[in-house]
Length: 105
Image (cartoon, rainbow, N blue to C red):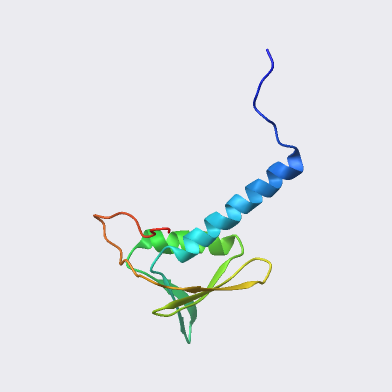
């Protein structure tokens, strides 16, 4: 019996996986209430939830970086050095009852 499942060649599979991981890291950086804080001792991340900080730190270990967060804007950089600017339309503060930070459109 012949399988109807299509197998992807390695380069296509690698591209799809790379795109998925790229979008996942962006989601970790965009869907939160983490703020980078700069002071004389350097840069730190602050948020109401330690889980949010951990996800942002993981994305940063993968080469992404949260450059700046203001009330209505967010600036990130990617591993390739590209700078991405996002407009914050609505902010949903952390709530242990809701257990979700991002409501994609």
